[in-house]
Amino acid sequence: MNVSMIGINFAYVISAALFIFGLKMLSSPATARRGNLVSALGMLLAIVVTLLAQGLDYKWIILGMAVGTAIGLVAAYRVEMTAMPEMVALFNGFGGIASLLLAWGEYHQYPQMSTFIAIVAFLSAFIGGVTFTGSMVAYGKLAGRINTKAILFKGQHLINAGILLLAIGAAVLFSMHPASGGGYALFLLIIVLALSFGVTSTIPIGGADMPVVISLLNSYSGLAACAAGFVISNNILIVAGALVGASGIILTNIMCKAMNRSLANVLFSGFGAVTQAGEGGGEQGEIRPATAEDVYYILEAADSVVFVPGYGLAVAQAQHVVRELGDLLEANGTEVSYAIHPVAGRMPGHMNVLLAEANVPYDQLVEMDDINPRMDSVDVCVVIGANDVVNPAALEDESSPIYGMPIIETFRAKTVIVLKRSMNPGFAGIQNALFFRPNTRMFFGDAKASIQALIAEFKGSD
Image 1 (cartoon, helix red, strand yellow):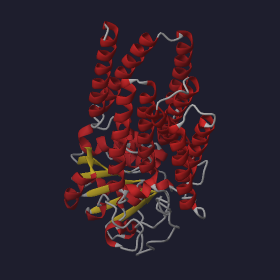
Image 2 (tube, rainbow, N blue to C red):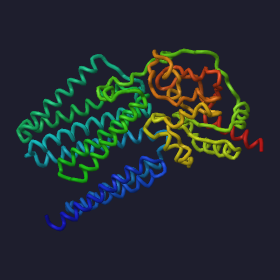
Image 3 (tube, helix red, strand yellow):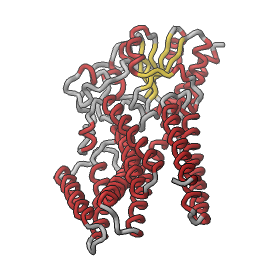
Image 4 (cartoon, rainbow, N blue to C red):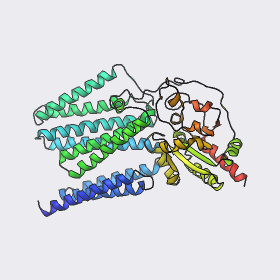
């Protein structure tokens, strides 16, 4: 091994270490931003070393980086926090299509592949294609461009199984003779099947289950990149792809447990079909509406308040006024915390990102498993736009489609204030039994405007 190769591999080891440390730092809100920078530094080092080692035509590389950087900056600057899940879905898709194109380009240039390289080229192209179209469907559902409900069609399982079997058969023939006359046609067929399977396997998934879908597609993009690394014999791409793939699978498993789903439900589609509104629970009593003045007096007298954010908080962009209300409560001597359900919102960590943007102290963010044992001693729970993740039917109604799903047990608090626009059901399409509990008060209206009214009550009392 010459000196240059030793230097390249040493740089790759440093990059891999930065990826691992950065990934570890992402596990905590307090270090997540630094972890992102550390991982980005590792990727920058890997890119620079690879370019120097390969001696590529830099003018096209620089042009591509400049165009990509400009698009990324504009997109990141303009995207609303409510649209962050859609952006994550797009990024997953772009990662998938990049792996597909890399494998395609490598095969087009060097058709005389070994059997092993042909197999990983198939994996890179197929998983990348599935990731791309699956992510585009997820983006469409999240952005409201496609019906967010599960779109089921006759014989979908047979069609999906047929696509998979056909893809495997084409992969076997392609791997045996990649450079034959029909090898290129088989590779193109694999790409078409991958793109088709991404659509048919994602379209039956309802909007309520998008957090699981996004984390699974993220894992797919990593696995595709890992396979692409084998295709071009690039060690750091193999390591980076494996890290993304493994972490994505772990996160998917966490999401599945948080929704009482199995990973098999996700992998074999038909997962998360949304029930019709009204199924799994009807009205269970009278609701008790409250005014801003009523809620103010309840909060003003409370020793402990727990905010439970949901997607409605993101839609109303109410994270900053929630932080302001929390500060006022703390100034009044109230203990304030924020209970985070793993699948609240539309992507993993959605609520953490929103609250971090509003500079909510990290030590006030409490996970579901930590807040539930304390719930009996909580004076007031303020539910902001959350629905299914606080529905007692998940614990009490065996006929409910969400039965068995772990929830934040807000119903055990002494008083529950629910901020909601209307009585419409959440993603699962069922009514929330919490709204009819005797200790629950409904504060109807836009979440941001409602909280601003509470802030005005506190400031007016000074």
